[in-house]
Length: 97
Image 1 (cartoon, rainbow, N blue to C red):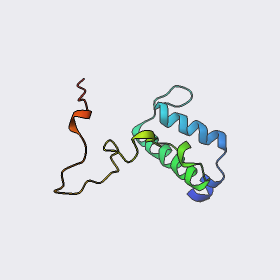
Image 2 (image 1 turned 30 degrees about the vertical axis):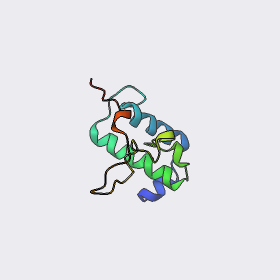
Image 3 (image 1 turned 30 degrees about the horizontal axis):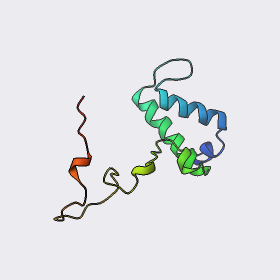
Image 4 (image 1 turned 135 degrees about the vertical axis):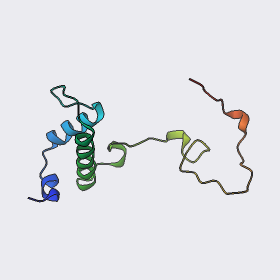
């Protein structure tokens, strides 16, 4: 059986268990995932979600940009080099921890 076939036939309950294990960093029985186990499990979860057409907003790692989409707070927005940004720097507050 190939990796593709394994993921195709993966039971949805196993997928949910793997996803929860990746999110929590531990197996359902409480044992901690090793970095290698976490990486392999995360790859399997992402592959399963792509293969089975899980909606993007329900996928592992999805970030809802909400009202910030397209604003200066959105890291996907590209700024032109050499141009002065049209953002008022006084509207942002620096938070120090």
